[in-house]
Length: 496
Image 1 (cartoon, rainbow, N blue to C red):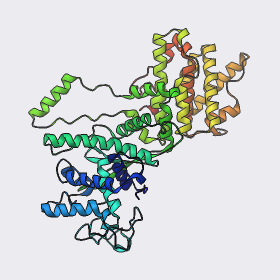
Image 2 (cartoon, rainbow, N blue to C red):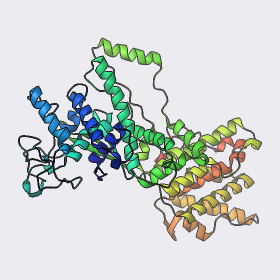
Image 3 (spheres, rainbow, N blue to C red):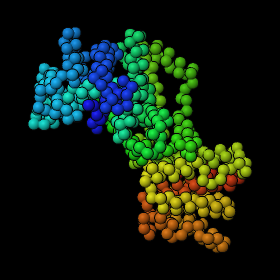
Image 4 (cartoon, one colour):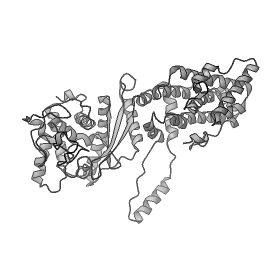
């Protein structure tokens, strides 16, 4: 019986077979399903566009690409690779992926029966290498079932920058969903290329983060159970080539980031998230006329115009989380609050200004909980401080304090500005804006020892303040720096 293994190559291949046969569980696969997958591969791998492209997965020594093979030998080697699962094994070795008995057939002239190397398993050693193999014996023991999964593996990947992008998740259902999406695209492109007599498979014209997150959001939207947090998962994406210069880059969407993305599309947060995602899209770099001129110029020079890679910077930057969380928060969430405030002051009356607790802070709070795992008490202190400072600025019309709090880059000066505002409030018979304990909770690890992320705390307070000050800002629009696409309105050492 087929089952998930935890290995990304084998699991993506298994997911591809499931998607090919429109099934959900490996236990549902029958011999007829495996045979159908094997027959499709036998028919299509030995001809273009897959014959030329799939050396990226299996090298030019693959059974379908080896130029020295006669048609008869290619057919014979294809059957060995694709139908070994049908033969009973007489070997004593166990598959390193599945634990099943290893295949009973030799996969090359240089490997022992039931052993596979780089022409079958991407990014391993060659047939005659002994380094990094147990006991110096070339190859890894492999079962016929795992071998078929590996053969199907590239069909469940996206073609991106001449390489494969494989997506493996801690929840098999997510691995299957990605494989299903990529398989559908690949089969469509393969059919079109074969009909047109093309030798190359079309590229996916997206950045890695853009493709990964865009596909994930589509999967979440279409899934009944992935849309909430009842089945948490993380994702690892492998961008690899097993060709002449083997290389791999690994990208991670951890549990907190995928949890944030799933909840960001729910009704409470979707408006703010959709607004931020849309605002992050780069402006059209050239109009249709300019694009046409570029293509004509390239054609006149005998070259092909380089296709434009579409990237959403927001989606690309998600791959840097949680390490770059402060930068991400400033670049997108704080900037969104600034844009919203400017938009409201320009178009709406005071009566139309939203009340405190609107979408931007809700999304920010979600980000702090899911991505940064920030303590709930600290989040509450930050929110409360933002409320009190906003009320103080509005009541006292203290434009100087607002500008200082927004732009100050020196922690001692920021603390001094807070102390002055606190003193002013007390002198007017008001409660303190911030107590000692609250100040320590928000800005310091201990007395006179600032958090390394004190600017993050300041930015979070600002997000809350800007939302609360919408009415005040409608009368004091010049107190708010102009938001810009390049971050030039943000404090200088944090610009993006």
